[in-house]
Amino acid sequence: MAAGVEPAGDGSPRGLISAGPGGAAGYVGRMDQPPKPPRVAYLGPEGTFTEEVLLTQPDLAAGELVPLGSMPDVLFAVQEGAADLGVVAVENAIEGTVNIAVDTLAFDVDLLVQRELVLPVHMNLMAPAGTAIEQVERIHSIPVAWAQCHRWLRAYAASAVPAPASSTAEAARLAQQSSDGRTAAIANARAAEVYGLEVLASGIEDHPENQTRFAVVAREGVPAPTGHDKSSIVVFQKADAPGSLLAILQEFAARSINLSLLLSRPTKHRLGDYCFVIDLDGHVADEVVADCLRALKEKQADVKFLGSYPAAGAAGEARRAERDVATVEAAAWVEALRSQIS
Image (cartoon, rainbow, N blue to C red):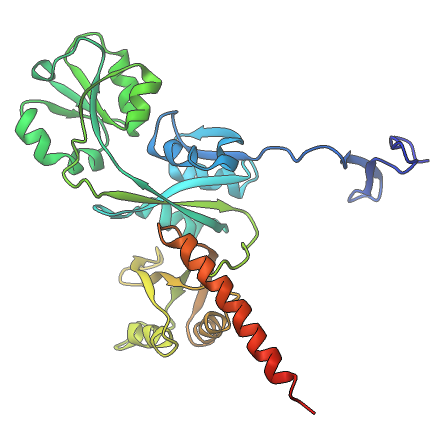
């Protein structure tokens, strides 16, 4: 038996021997060992909305969580192999697309979306225990959080001034470190728990129905179709001319493919040169979607595929179940037709 291979009880080798780049054999691992938990990169520190949403996913929560300082850092960590998966915010119901994440995915890395996650966004004013709202003079948070709580702040904390932070969790950490009794933060309830802060006011967001959509990305792999899927692409125009966008949209309209996102972004090459980030209903495994992508790739300057993945939403499971039933019925119908061939 080759050296380094432990025999199993039945006499078969339990380890794997494989040839490396130079042809030398080496021990890869034990076949009976459970798979190693994935390293999951996310926007840190602990207590961000990104951490909150990934903790709702058992497989992600069971991984080795790697908090990083920015969303590009998260995406590059996956690209460079420092993390297996990354979680980044890509769209907010009030503020719109998170451009820094979308642009990094479109131009700087080659990653594939594995799934999307949607998190209700609830803002809270928090401070060290014993702080009263009337005493607050400084509130740490990010500009987006301030904007989403403008009406409440105007009514109840008009004299407080905004103080910068890299994330809502960082804002909570800064508030925790203050000891003047006049510093607070706007963040989620998770951050108050992590940093031991007292929630002075909850649900202070101006729009209670606010949600943020997140993407889970990996270096490779397209999840199998589920019957309720999305695909994301970037389309680069062949020419900036009248009707160029219409020509792109007609490919979807002709095939009755619904678009859930259409975003124009500068290509970073020259002034006035734009591409389009598009989310469409369907999976690349669907022939109608594949046909549309073929047409766009043929007629436009380029198409970058960002992935096909299960769509989020309350109706997702029901739609997937309906699709499963419809698929079985359609397959039975076709087989019944074929059985009549003499």
